[in-house]
Image (cartoon, rainbow over all chains, first blue to last red; front, side):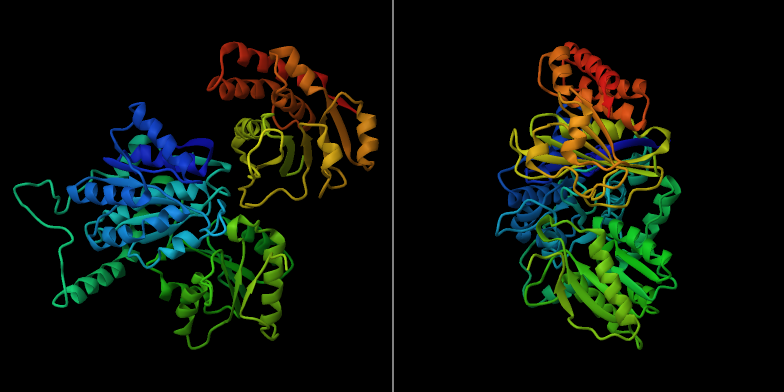
Length: 392
Length: 191
């Protein structure tokens, strides 16, 4: 029986971690994630979980501790945000290169400078090439559900990769919303016992992690990492299917919202997708065929599926809450790559919104949908990449 | 009330405004409703103006941005009436609830409220001082809001106040807040 609660995103993800009860948790505070690990530290202190906390002096050390614990043979978690994720950068590659299924909630926050504690996607987008699986969440319910599913995906014997679960800092992490918790026993059964693969602590079978591999086999090693990423989509869908049976909540590689017959569409991640859906409904009420695609699995990116979902639209705007300065927004570059393979493809524009927690309002979605409507009806594209909601 | 009720709280740091929004969200969960409660995060300083928001709806709440056109504006500190525009984005039928010693009529004149807009006042700070000796007006404001909006029954709210405050405070403080919530409910006036 599901339990209905009104909790913050941080509280919900801490609860998911409590229900999974991992062996080891690397803990280092950073706003807006701090509150999640503080809650988890309380669970440890109050004997609600058997997890061994490793309190460290930096995020680099936190990820290093997680790598050691995971290679030793444990189920391992940590959580971070912003510059904390940036400081982990070196170790993120080692976690994925060593094929260690560490699970890490990332509470998305802007990167410095200037210093800003609020939500944007610069942190996780900066980590998109680290070889981690990335799953993104619109609200606290999705962050909770995705965290539970991430264990099954990352730990799958065909995958064995680390996974980060993203949610928007403050907007979701610190907002109270209604959601449903699964029963402890249901979560425990769903994630199952942790299965070891080549644990260092199996002293009868000594092994090495992270040895020097030069020109003889490094290329092949990376080829294998590419190969395993191609299998992730299938596992994500398989796990989502099982999760739906348990919870009644449906997940895919992305969410298609009123896209089937859409002429115009937004592609947008996380909390701003929710706000946009209400505006899409308002456009539909006015007879304009608007739709929305909300990516869930960003790494690996489901190029073919995204292209298929958008192929009948006339104009699409990819909305980025991060910028690759001197380039397009990171999500735009993926969607653009996906659509290039189509013979007939929609017009495509890129808007940068909401950096450093700038509010994303319904009026912003209206502005963009109106522009797309004009383009779909034969209007010209004035500018391919543009900042919106900006004080000029 | 409409299908979705949007509430904007105005308070100052240290008055328990954010807690009030949280307690209200929790109390409104009943009957399968969807709820949101979230503050506007700035530098957190005692005495600084802050806003917090609630949405309560029979439908799933997908909007993740501040409340722009509030159905209810709840002002926890009357000095804010002089320093910020608490009526920003208000609708023709927005309900204002203000913690003040003044009569509803005076507040109506000050806000230049329209005929369709309802004004309620309650001396929540005095109630708080009477009941538990601290100028913490959040619980009487919750009681008043409960009466004004009819979103939940008083009994239900009291149960939630007991639950929420019970996590942090001694029995004496909890009892004081329960009494203050009841008095806020009883003493709120319309005009």
